[in-house]
Image (tube, rainbow, N blue to C red):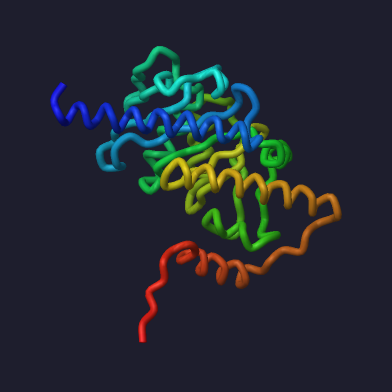
Length: 230
C-alpha cells in the first residue's frame, strides 16, 4: 500500500466510524427505532462523483460495526459484507441533485411520520421553517420504499430545501456533513412536534409571505461569522 492508498484507507475508516456514530445518535434521539431509517455520507466531492458510504440494510445501529458501513458507487455497485440500505438510490440521487449535500439522514421520527401520513406540507406556522430553505417544508407524494419513483419524488420536494417529508413514510434531511445533518434532523423533528401540537388547538396563525421572505433572507447569514465595516 502506497502513501496515497494509506491516507485514503484512514479517511474511509474515519468516515465509517463517524457514520456509525451518527446512526446511533439518531436512535438515541428517538428519530429511529430498530432498523428503521438510514444515514449516509458523500465520498469525495461532488465533481468527483465518488459515490457514498451508507448504513447497511436490516441491521440496527447498536448491532453494527464501523467496518459494516457499505460503499455504494455512483453506478450502484457496492462493496461490503452486507447489502446497503434499501434506500441507497434515494441517497445517491439526492447527492447527484444537490452538490452542497455532504450527508443525508432518513428517519421514521414520530412527529414527522405522523404529518407525513397526513400528506401535509408544513406551512409557515413558525419562523424556524426558514432554517430548511424556504417558507414551507414540502411533503413528497407517496412511492414505494427503495424505488426510483421515491427518489424522484424526494428530489423534487427538496428543491431549494434541506428537508422534506415522504408521504406515509418519514423524513429526509441533508446537510454539509454528518454533524450538520444530525442537528437539522433533530431540529426538524422538533418543528414537526410543535406543528402537530399547535394543530391540536386549531389551525395555526401563519406568517405572511413578506414576513417569511425577511426571515429567509436573515437565514442566509445565520450562524456565519459577521464582518463589520466602518
